Image (cartoon, rainbow, N blue to C red; front, side, top):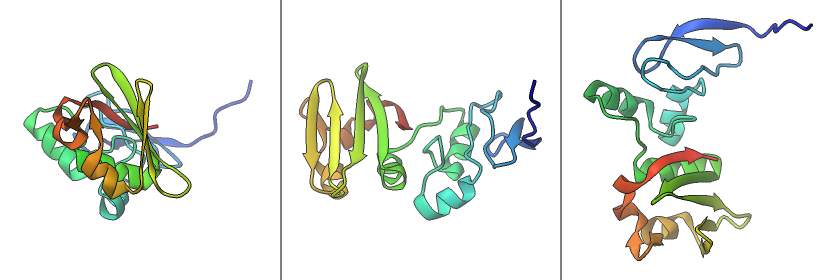
Length: 149
C-alpha cells in the first residue's frame, strides 16, 4: 500500500478563521464552519481578476457576506469576471442548468434547455443575454449556483 506523502497543514479559513486543511500546492478543503472553498491564491485572484476560485465571489465580499450572515453569492459582474478568468462558467435558473463559454474567436456561447445563442463579444453577452425575454443581468438575484465548469 502506498502512503500519501502530500504535505498538508491546518490553516485558518480565509473568511471565518475556522481551521481548514491546506495542501502543499495551496488548495484548501471546504470550510466546515462557513462553507468557503479556497483555491489557495484568492488574494491574488481578487487583485487581478476580481474573483475567487472556486467560489467566484471576491474574498473581500465573501467576508462581508459572512459577517452579515448571508450565503456566498457571486454578482453578475463576478460571473462575467469569472468567465474572463476561466472561459467556462455555469449557473442554474428555474431548475435548468445553463453554460457560458468563450469560443475560439472569443465570442460567447450561451446554452441551456436546448437553446443555444452566440454573442459576438463578452460585452454583448453582458448587455443582451436573456432567458425567457428577461435580461440575465436583471434576473441575477433569482440565479442559483453560479460556478466554474
